Figure 1 (spheres, rainbow, N blue to C red):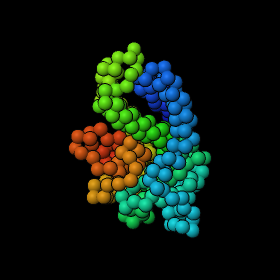
Figure 2: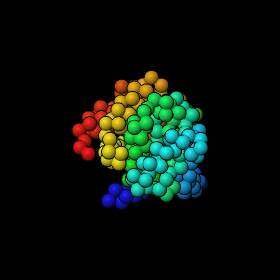
Figure 3: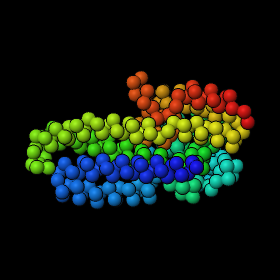
Figure 4: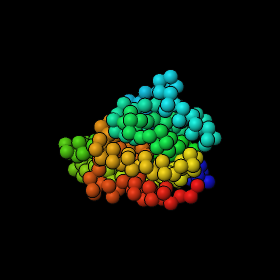
Length: 285
């Protein structure tokens, strides 16, 4: 059931990206629409096969072997075995911000990435809880929908920037050669696309974080360790927010790695840490 729902969401998100790109291309007439269609096809294929690689590159993640970080590697293997999942590739992100994420289109093509900061901050049991949470996303097949949604949000944000630039210079000749109307259309696009980006990220149900918390806690049979880890991570991010990557990818991480204003926190892709911790501490194993 979970797999089917995520497949449906993936189709919806890719469809939204396709529609938006085609709409954007149509402002430059038939030729623009044709170029947009070709770009969309490449983007959809790329998002499926390469989006995880793009995210890992974005955060300068370096793949490690057991000899490079035996403690981390051992924890990931233990959790993978306990969760009855294939061993994912393991990466370290060169950031002092304490955080972690999982990515990949399927359990057989997955990766877990931990920042340098999380390895310094958390105890062994707490880090194991975080890894179990991320492995649960892999097991629930959330990772494909997460990375594709993040890719879509990033593209939408980029389109908004392009539209603002075009509108600033009066747009370009488009449908019916009505430059003024076309410029106005671009300005409208520039205003609404950031809103769409936010809605797409919010469309990634916050309930998946609760599900991953619970499943991860049950895998390691220690909900208190994950609860404690979440509290430390929230505090750690406040004092040392992420400086790599893009906020469009915030939904990939176990907690939002970027420092958000009070208003933006209302649109957070993650449930409140306080509520997550409360649920974990009430969980009966």
